[in-house]
Length: 569
Image (tube, rainbow, N blue to C red; front, side, top):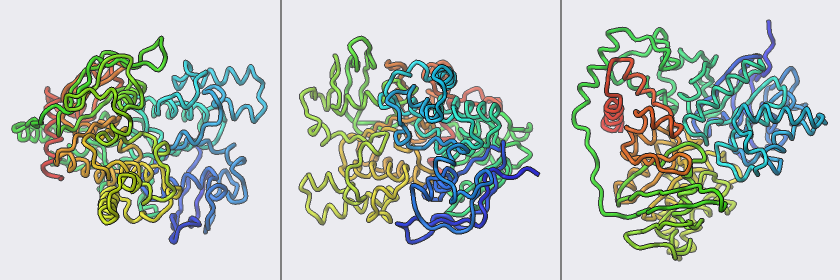
């Protein structure tokens, strides 16, 4: 019988700074060639398991362990990060923390340089893997010049140059647009087939990971394994929702239609579903019942207007061209599109971090060209994609309170505001913790809290739910929705198509620096030409509706979202 390449036996781990163990009673074997997904809410211990496998625990993050962990037959605690790196290749959730080289090419080649590989052979390897992840045209760029999705591709390429036995991916889809996420899963699948390495993926975006087959899912909760089973068996039950993980949308739609999810349905993917005539009839009947009563929100007067905006980081290339749109008071709008389309650049222009080449930005009819960044920040709050670029205080409470202290707000009012914000962001129990003790996803919530606490007129969020489990995703988005209902205007740059559908009626679509569309959120993912042009992908609701004979997939999607808002919330 084949021996496991990773084996946890009665394993537990407690960080030095923590009063309780983060991992408890872990018994888990992963075999050569397996593809395993580890899922769970933020703080459930899934990333800690990954850090144990690659040696960051205990060599970078010390603590007390019990039981045993062996990696490729070697007891991990008696090895080293360097030795384990020859067996385990890791793509970290926080890609900025993984870069070594001054250029993309140097970073990809780093591991081979350590092995003293000949230059010609090294260059060929870098060229091959960079082409596979579609980053070969950026080899001379600094990693810091890249978008979040492009950085993820560089990290993937860096892992692929080593002939490792385990490929470990910590939230590989967190910063990618939908189509790039799908390509990444295809890429991981291809690398798995070519190398035969065991693949371990730690990820919240369950439906996206299941774009390609997985052998099993490990479900974590409060530091323990609560399920270890084949994909179909887990999807057929209710364990995912019970433990704060969103199930694939097509399964939720089937449940709404009164269809029992079983393994016989082959629920692993929307294309693998085996639906009989009776099941399809149930979906159709549910759709007809929900079809009436779809309404569009009414909004107030103009708040933000962008006219003929043009911008380029270099004189010979424009990153944004001919951008025109108007945002009204009380709107909640998604800004979507492929990585590098100009979405984050647009946010920087609105906040004053960059100056346009031409065009204008108006707030309540007034040109804000001469407003300072500080003056704009009093009315426009911006939550960046990478939390490490925003955090400046060592303690969570101090970070969230900082802007209020600078504003001169009385202490009693500050305390009340900070406590309220920390609670809705799921951070109140961590209020006295150092930021350094938090996961990437928890840091993200700290940065959101530091902006939300100021209650600006407009809140711009760059990937607000990246790295968040379903529970905290819902908490944050429900809080944003409540703010929106009170009159706050919210713009969300997002790759999460369900977020766009569920929380915003309107979406502005970008591709290659140009605005492709300003339309309803449901229309965006039900227009194949727009989906292709913006590097998005059709929602599984689109596929399900067509499979059931529904010729109006956009209306079906709107019915699904309306039903969720009415019944679930």
